[in-house]
Length: 160
Image (cartoon, rainbow, N blue to C red; front, top):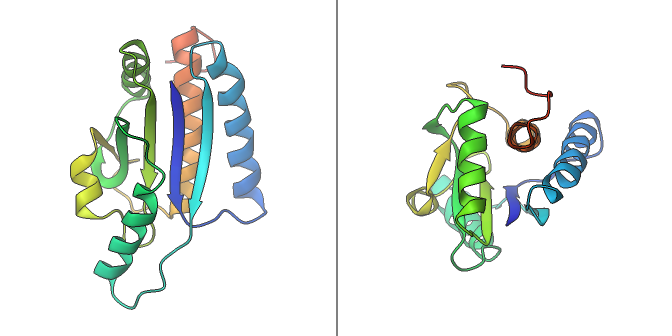
């Protein structure tokens, strides 16, 4: 199964980029042994539209252009579920075992994801009830993907 993160906004050079790169590489290495063929990140430019609805619509169109047919969509959304890491790992492992070709994690911009993309998502995940900057959500998501891989592999990284 291929895993992709489609995120509105760019990570500039600095600590967030370094941390994201570290977890990206860790998941890529651990994931290959578990049947995750590829991890990719697509950065979508933030819309410059004046109103939030138009920004979300433009960003949704750009995100949708990167989604292959029959993908499992996961919305990173503050209204989503707060999942334990083991539950997150079970979702990922089940989708892989069911033969899903692609699992796509979508991170919206400052206004969030469009209602249309949220409706299409099989799962919506929040990292607590706080609102997080999309750059931090990307780092936390990549860490959780790596943690999920270690849980599926029985590696001691996750000590629950």
